[in-house]
Image 1 (cartoon, helix red, strand yellow):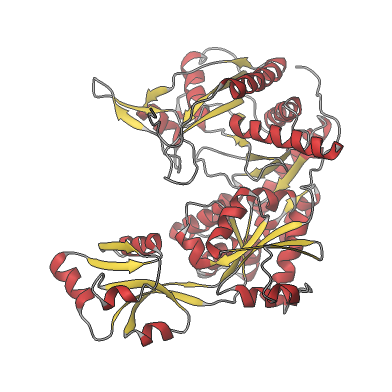
Image 2 (cartoon, each protein chain N blue to C red):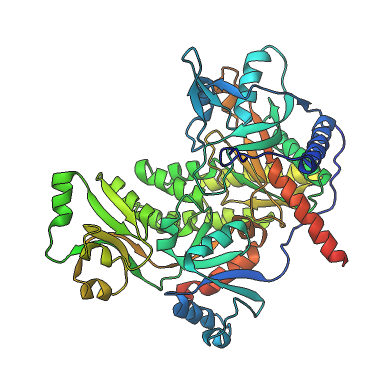
Length: 228
Length: 332
């Protein structure tokens, strides 16, 4: 065997500040609070700035839709990201990212809901073998019915899903609820709870290994018990 | 007129082909220099033969019936066919056997994930050489290969496939809980891991802490000390195995690019002992992996310790391009 050709000790470092993808939308405010809590100055971001990228305290913050966060993180375009567990559930098996911390805020539930006092969910199941379910989370919904041994025709809609059972597109909906007010105002009620969701910190696989020290440091600072 | 090809497959045009050919030639040259002779096996195998090697595995192969009704499969990696080859063709010759390969392998994909059905794999298998010496040799060849293709910054993550199986046995975690914990570890879902661990009844606080802290330990030789501080026989044994391999890597001059990683768990079913993943800072994806599979060749009737690695050549090619870009931008 030939003698080794490798001598120099190389410890690779990905260049530049860590990139953290953060979600606009429902988690935006509490995410900025959490970042304030670890000493970042997010006042500039709270304004009506149209910028998408912010550099601060050795961290690059990239803002995007929550459902895009796993995409950027999986590819390594962002090292880390914050998004809802609901997003991770919907993209489960699609996006290979490490889920490394429960940030505890942004609590909500994925539920099956039907019209108040209406029996069509049960009746459809009994008489025609399956419920018609409208949802923005088709994969989560399908998995839920599959795992509970039932059949449902899952109809994906993009907009206000509460509309579907009101005008007869579906017997019920699978949707994310925080307070339940929207359901109530539309005459809907929760029938089953499918999952609970909070904000999660996710990491790119390579970044988690090659930038271990920086990643772990940020994780410890963001840890809810750290009293940020 | 456009005639479609299946998603996850692609045509390769001359410019890329030329670079891929050079990449392959460079790798084969390194493999040969270390004494690894190139072999080729059929793209198609009997499904039953591949299944024999797979054990518990999430890797889906394409299967179909031939004209006689035999169930065939497209190979989903190169390691199992080479284990079959060694058991069938080299049963009477003295190990160790050193083989290398370059070839396409095929895996089923989920749609719209930018996953590939066909990928070019290049690597080596060292059969009949036990840990830690055999592992160290494989990693040295891997390191030399990465340097030869210009990935001087690439890092080898080194972990132990038996650690958690043994640790869970030591902690008395069985059945459903055990499976769930191993699944969460393989996904590296630390939030789900904590939930799964908390579901185990009768697990003491120390066992809990060990299970939750170990997966985060990655770095230089110091992580072995940190692991040992958590205590327990399974952790101690894994730390010893990793230490022995690491010491040999120091001697071979490749330890500088090795990251010891107690959180590493690969999802192929046949790994035992050392497992490896390959990272390059220019790419967010893993370039390849490998490890020991001491039980695999035995499933084909010729028990012998073995280890190897495989590189996803298309990804190595992308990383090469990215690294060249980094250099170019540095010069500007």
